Structures are given as structure tokens and as C-alpha cells.
Amino acid sequence: MPAPAERILDNGLRVIAFQQRSAPKALGVPLIAAQLIVRGGGSAESDAEAGLSALTASLLTQGTTKRSALEVAQSVDALGARLDASSGFDAAVVSINATTPEFPQAFAIFDEVIRHPAFTPAEVERVRTKSISDLGLTYSNPSALARLVANRVAYAAAPYGHPLAGTAETLASLTCAEATHFHERWYRPDNAVLIVGGDITPDDAFALAQRVFGNWKKPSTPAAVLQPFSAPPSRAHVVIVDKPDAGRTAIVAGRVAIARNSPEYYAGTVATAVLAGYSGRLNQEIRVKRGLSYGAGAQLATRREPGLFIASTLVDHTKVAEATKVVLDTIAGLGQTPVEAKELTTRKATITGAFYRGIETIDGIAAAVGELALYDMPLGELERYVAGIQAVRATDVEHFAKAHVASDAFVVLVGDAGVFGEAIRTAYPAVQIVPFAQLDLNRANLMR
Image 1 (spheres, rainbow, N blue to C red):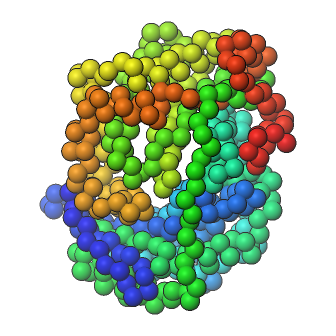
Image 2 (image 1 turned 90 degrees about the horizontal axis):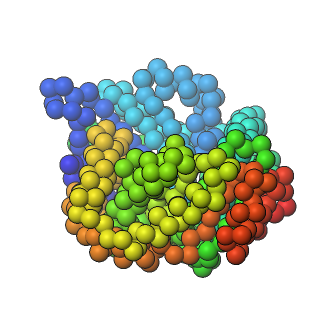
Image 3 (image 1 turned 180 degrees about the vertical axis):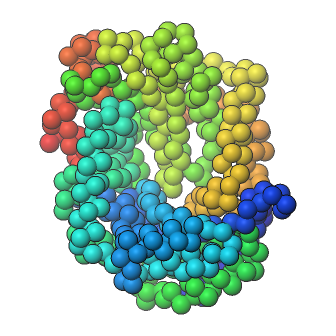
């Protein structure tokens, strides 16, 4: 495992470097990867600006003040490099990788798209049109739509509640000027972390960062600060999005859980693994034992503020009431039925296996280091991750489940309510039905 080193440039840019070849020296391909993490993603937007962070990040690679979008793509391809930009709720990430001989040229393009994007009207319109088209596909997928609704149900009007990609209405209102302003406000050296690693020594990485980014001027005004916020209190209720043309019904149950820097992070990761995966409890109960679905799983998203735990599956409309009960009972059971030693061992093995697969590439290591830096975690956590997972006890899983998962879970159902609605209203006291035609993810109450 590489030992990251770090320095802070005079302009406030935090630079983290590590040396790691992609394989044993005799076989390794000389690769270098870089990531710039900019604090202030989707959670820095208002509801009316939903999608602005994602739009801004997408536009970075679509032309600069020196090159058109096509010229940027051709320059990157000519180097055999890969350039990407995206935004999450807590940060935007721009990344590049290339072979060692070509990396300095690739790094110069990386700097160019970060600091000198063009935000031309034509590219804004093209990216916006594609984004709106993509939303149409998302809304036609019951599972994808259920997750968007679950975010809004969990966070209501809090910053994590609105769709990260925006809505057709918000995207239509976004302009070049707003993208430019968002970039000027958040893309600044004293609000960013640069990670450089691979076939390069830390000293050489620091020298390269200084040479390319050292003249990135810090604005005279202080950097904006993302303010802490709280999600609404957890409340057990059911939200049905009535979509008669859905082929099956998506079920998402969840509640707000923990932040990335929580001391319960490792317990939460193991608890989620007990429920997730083919051998996890949800899939065993829903698919293997009852044949209600092709699969079921669970996820725990940990962020700057407490993130969302969800359990999900996709079932026939006639099986919704039964499957919903099984999902909720299985989640609740995690806080009632102790995890046996054999089950705990196998679920931990899936976590550590996924961790090692994730860091077997230079980009994977950079992403892992970047996550630690973004959430102000000690960089040494990279080395301690596996030990942290192995140290989790059955009682830790039980305590985490009782506190953050097992009670007061909401349920989102997206499907043909004409088939299952009556059974759900009979089984659960608090039910909200939203016709798909009236669904509005811009609003905390989901209704137009």
C-alpha cells in the first residue's frame, strides 16, 4: 500500500502524492493518474439550481478558451489519455491518466479544462439537451426513479434532497452565466485537493503540481463554506408513485444513517454487507426462499453529512405487499437477530475483496485517497481499512442496525398502484400516493 505524502502550495491548493506502479516492476505499465477534487457539488445548489454542479462539471471537457470540445477530445486521444469530469453531492471531480512519457502534456490539458473552460452557449445547450433526454430514460425506469424519490423523501428540502442531475425544469433555466458563476465560486485552489500518483515520485509530483498549478491565483474573497444541515426526523411511511405503464414495481426502503467520518463507519459497512449481495439476507429472503424477484440488495451512501441507507428490489405488481413486508422485516431483523460468526466472516470477505479490487489500479488508489481527503479523514485510513473491517463485532452490527437502520424506515414504491395500492393502504397507516403525471422532484412534497 502506498504511503501518501502531502503539501500545501502557497495558493492554498492541497497536493497529495503517492508512488505506485500498476504491477510488479518487470511487468508494470508506467501510468500516472491525477484527480482534482473541488468541494461544493450538488449540495451547494439551491433547489431552483438543481443540476448546476453536474452541468458545470460536464462542460469542463467540452471546450476551453484555447480549444473547442473536438480539439480537447482529439488532444486527449492523441496522447492515449483519459479525461473525465463529474459531480457528486459533496464535490466535483476532474481526473486524467496517461502513460508516464505523455503525462506532462496530459496534465497541461487537465489544467486547461479546470481553469479555462469556455462555457459556450452552443455547448451549454448541447449538454443540457442530452441531460434532459437522459432524465426521460431515468424516469421510465422504476428502480432509478424510486431512488430519486427516496432521496427527496429522506431529505425533503435539505440539500441532498433534490436530484443531482436536476430536472427538466431546472435544467431548462440554467445558463452560461450561472455555470460561469458556479465555476468562479467553487473552482479555486484553496477549495480543492489535487492527487497525483502512480509511476512518479512524490517529489516529482509536487514539482509538477507547483509548475502547472502554482500560478492558479486564489481569489481575494474567502472561499465559500458548505454549511452543516440536518435531514428531517426519520418517519415510517409509504410513498407510492403510481406509474401504470411500469413493467414491475420498484421497492426502496431506507432512512438517513451516518456521515463518512462517523466512528460507526466500519460497523455500518459490515451491517450493509450482511444485507447486500447474492448471499446477503435480502437476496436470500426475497429471491432464494420466496422467488419474489431476480435480486435484492442494500447500499449505504456515506457523505459529508449523514448519508442514506437503502434496501431495494423489483417485483411483480401482485407481489408488492408481500415483498415490502419481507424487506422491512429483514431490515428490522438485523437489529434483532445476532450475526453468526460464519456469516460475519463471509460478509467481511466480500468487503475486503471489493476494497482490494478497487485499489488494484492507479485510478482506484487515487479515488480512495481522494475520498479520505474530501471528508478530512487521516490518509493512513487507507492502510487501516481492512483492519477496521475485521475489527467489527456482531454486537457492533446489531447496535448500528438498531440506531440507524432497523426502525422508522420509509418505503417508496414505483409501479401500478391499481394492482397493489389497496393492499398497501390496508397494511400501512401512513400512505401517500403520487400520480406519475403529477410527480415533481423539485418540491419536497413531490407534488406539482
